[in-house]
Image (cartoon, rainbow over all chains, first blue to last red; front, side):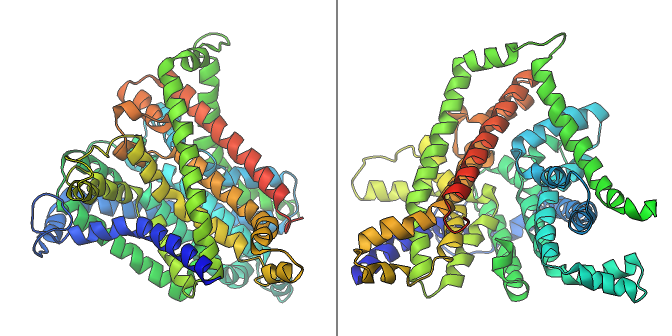
Length: 260
Length: 276
């Protein structure tokens, strides 16, 4: 009995070392003084962090990535929440198909989505880079918004909304003051997932970026092809700390369970 | 009254239009372009693609690496999830530690393997110092490093899918089976394992389709002679500007991932005794 525990525990420990260890090694090697990325490094310095903030290409790419992630998620909310509401609230034909349509971007491999957008949206209409990225990332975010909002609305009792209506509230008032507050936490976790997914996306953006206008992960990929210094380790550490911060906030407010 | 009746249309329409214009029409345009390149229907695009030895190698490598990674994820994920669900006193922490890499950029995760498996990396230092090899081995830019990257990328998904079903299994089920005379092994094989099977299938579909469509990891940890389907789409589209071949490969990717997830998700619903 005890032995059987021990074996499972040992395997689990090894699995977690495999999952987390590489990330810790990156963090540790960001403080090394050598110009080459080695682990274990020698000395202790923050100079690579200073270096990151001096590289305007990284800073600009990070800002662009954040802007696109938030803007695309906002558009996805505007498109997805009303649709999810209608699907849950009103009887009409073809609901199954519509629901599948809203969830379908997640079924198509991102690399394919990027390619078809490049060929039949961006090239055909000569779209500039920023709108193309915004459209592509909105496609990525819609399924997250749809999935979480429909499941939150499934638990919502629409009789409450009708009660508000019979007490004189307009449809709009009832939606914003009764329905929306009830599905707030579901929408919040959908937003977190959508923003993180969009921020980390490579395969869609790689078709839509242009020289000079790059998203952060693509900028990093380009950099590590030619350079192998601790600057990237420092940048990666900053990004991982930000991720940890986001996770802590989620855990304190929504609970991590709600986003996985 | 009609306005009220059709309010759903107003709410659904913007999203539907967006998806139709920016996803469905492009998707069908690409599909049609592979069958009707210039004039009339032809299968030439697919015939030449499937006939090419290069495509066969790339397709074979994609399937092989995805299957291998799925198998390794299942073998590592099952005991871990079982331990966490049954015995771990730090369940929340273990979940968080599985979610953390999932939220971390695949670029960073692949990059970490470039550091670890490189010629001066920790693995090679160990191999040389321990006397197993006289000089550093090339562990990077091959199928080995790609598989390591894939497994690390998708193992959290496997663990979380398995945890989902394992947590719904009552803890005293094994004891109940034991008191009815079953040995621990047979209780596990005949009761616990079948209950976990649906989670195992769901996790495997996530890992397999994830590996089949991943781009960052094969791009960073693979080489030009270890192309997979996703890097092939990119290469044909962006480097060679051969859009008809890129389209055909893209369609193959869609068909394979949809077939696999369709069949296995159906299977997972069929074999889940709790859902029945």
